[in-house]
Length: 168
Image (cartoon, rainbow, N blue to C red; front, side, top):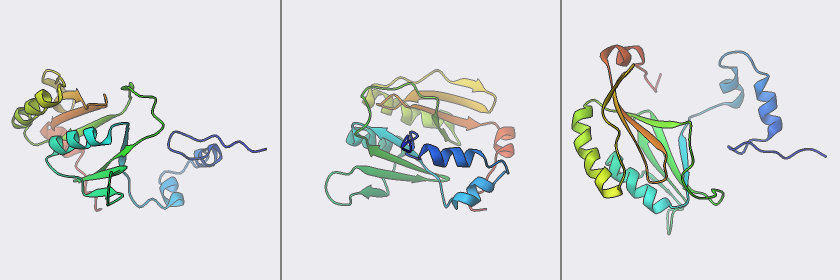
């Protein structure tokens, strides 16, 4: 009898085990024929989280599934990132401590804070004090489900060292 254990992303334990044996850089992406990547955030209250991210990002989702009726999935497309939100039937409710942060890079953190402060008041969230980090200046806050978001303005050195063209 074979085990049907699954990872949090839904991959079978057997697949993960075989992929873990690949030790050549880049071979995993080639073997899986990756065509893109996205961040997906599960929520029990999709309409609330969709409104929050619409207000935070200043854009409406570019994808809604199904296209008619109440969505179960929406996707925001940002430079270098696809951010998906989906209604989960498997969360046990409440905010969960997460080791992952959604980091949003801005050109003018001080200017962005004005907008963010209005959002914080509307959604009753708190923003950390502005701080200097190794990569520049940042603040952090949590979305209505408790997911950590970092808004940062990179230092010139960090911006230059991490410059990336997602097309190439």
